[in-house]
Image 1 (spheres, rainbow over the protein chains, first blue to last red):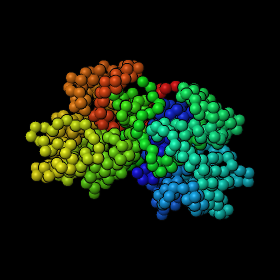
Image 2: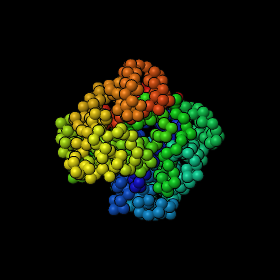
Image 3: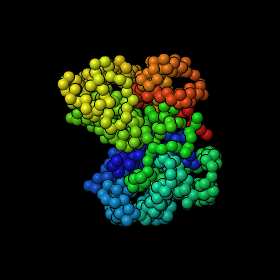
Image 4: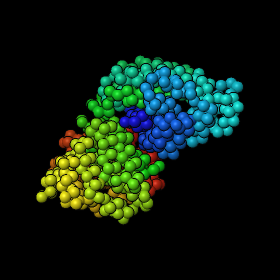
Length: 289
Length: 289
């Protein structure tokens, strides 16, 4: 499979892995976010992922194309954060070895035009984001294309924009530091056993246990995010019924660890690219009989 | 979305619709056939579906490419029959109106080279098929490319090959008669309500009630296939719990109405192409809480 095919499959495996507390998965829809919308979003994103695989295509435009295709197909924002991580990783895999060093070279090589593509992507769908850092109001991503003159004036590349957001967003932090969590989680997916769908759910819980989910911080504050992290940590080796109870509780409270899902999708992509993992084999999770 | 995107999405929606008695769905894996393999198969088939959308590409080669990509990604046969129906329907949609008349023109225009592509597709994966009609042993599809000289000698197009199999295989019958069940089921999907994933499950049960599944006939005989049809007919408006009990029973008996799943995927494609159906909206099926 090509890198863009692996990226699309990673999106599909991410949403299907279950139980994935607080998120849409094979076993659960959220009231305003449906499993079928994630399937459509993954299909719609593929054309942009293919552009990301082509080194002659600007990375920011590739990302914007992926987001526009996703939003058009899904009718909502299903995988914006996943695509933000996958776009440079697809470019890295399509042009040579998929290593943290080469991925860093890809993000560091981004331009002001790439940053403009990133901002335009926000015009295609609603994205939950925090307030911009102090003194950066004119760079608020929610301004979409209106922020592009400020980007040009300050000569900010997409890498620079991510560096501005790295404090409050795990995806931005990955972008500016060689994707350490993504590559670590990919290693764990490799070392795990069973079919990839089960490993996806394990990887999600492991990442959730590692640090507070930054989308949960944005939406519910640091205390809630830390409480969720501690509960995930206590459940890493717990029986699945306990993980399911945690999942039901998060959904009831409207707590959606979306950034952890983004990291999981990116880790699945890296694992698929490295090979030696399979979608076949007996599932550990017995779905409803 | 383009026809090849709609076709890939139709494959994903088909396998996800639940409950779909006897088949892999969002709620159930089979012992040797996993949900994740269908996701991978759909992604892997896309390149062939894109060839099918290009009128300059031979239809038989497009089908072979789709099957090879599916088998490579899934590691098994997940969607051979679906792709057999989708290939000419994608070609039809990509070149004009998607009507039974135009779909018939597409299948009737196939060549001996297209037939050879169809036979070569059997070399990429195992397909459950019945014995060939009397006097047609050298055209047994299980011979793969070895049957190509016989095709050439008898000057048989892909349409002709399908006509030979139309007695015992609903997919072949669709191919040679303007896809009547597919278009009818697409109409019902349109008239149904709720998100597409629920309509997919309804369409499957409706098709299963309509006539004996020809894969079940091949694998278990006509009596079993007719019994399955009668039970499906009795359950069309039944509470979902009863449909689930039927599903559990079919899985226990190893009865897999695969041809009905193929027809469902093709009907979903037609419904997506016609528009006015959505992956959003509240699911009727509440997955495990």
